[in-house]
Image (cartoon, rainbow over all chains, first blue to last red; front, side, top):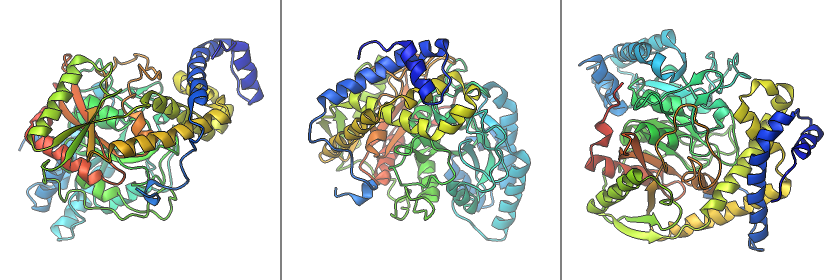
Length: 63
Length: 464
């Protein structure tokens, strides 16, 4: 994923009712870039037929 | 017997001696409380010590045993609980400032079971704030330290439990494991820790971290003790819809069945990559020991584990943010900096990415299912490196995270265990991770016991 501007994180936080100042946004930015970058790559490479697990506990499923 | 010897007796052995009236529960509780008083200022393993209550409970246990009213194999045995479990009338902080004054009115389901089994509660142990972290560097109550090296972390989040067990401050403990939080301190402190199958043990009355992964499990110094404690806490709970209907096993039965006829799966990918040489050597030797005990080794494929770690991070962060949302808005300054950042990150995860992480979860489950179709258990290192220094920041990157060999099992929901298998070049304990099929905890314990019986690591004591 490309760079995430700190101002974007601050605006997003405000939209969600959170207080995020510039200093804390600077801490959060590399974490967000790394995680969202990896999630974006997963989104691009997941097989089309991959679905989430069915609801229910493991014991309810066929072995 | 000296007080120190009493404090390092296994819980099951202690229970047998108490039942035979060779030692009294009061004598045992006093010895542990004295040891806590002597050592815990250096370890900071306990957030609350319930000394008066422990002595009263021990006196009750003593009277019952003398009257022939046994409550089972752990009657009168001293217990420490991670401070994430609700305890009626006893402060339960979850390692947080937010719950610093929280005194629950009711015990967690597992605490009710342990009280019914006659265990004596010594106190509540230190943890990473809200169990969201791998070190127990607690910003509000101070860091917990590893008895094997006071400059190092005992791991986390159940670090106080790991440290207390290793130092002989309790006989058994209960932890929780959402991303390795039982197995990390077990590996780092040289004790045994079992993360059960998701749904095997009730979570009612346990502060959640991430509903999709949270598990409650036993920690102790020996495999037998873990098995006996697991038998006391596992089983259905009508008040917890995430708890499986399957009845509890006697997990101690079959412990001595040995390795003959079992296939041991050794992963080709991921689980040995970037592992410190001293740790890899100890784990490879442990695998050789299990082969000499009669196991057949098979290589297994476990691809996609970096994605599993990322999916774990996304699901955990989003679910933790959902649980903490109201507090994060009302009292953000009351969170430690790292936890707050993790929760804020969870707030920003798009729904599409959360769903994609769940799609990865299904793939990970299929991968473990396939690997365990050709092997009875999988074996690998627990931790890739020696315990972090106290205060050293933890990474969540897939290639660097301390828990990267553990999170895939949380994503799958499968059971896993860490058993001590030697020491690394720094003299710190090394854990062997054993993974099994859903609800086959008894088999994991059997394998761990076969290894424990063939070696002498469980008899080593830290130099504290």
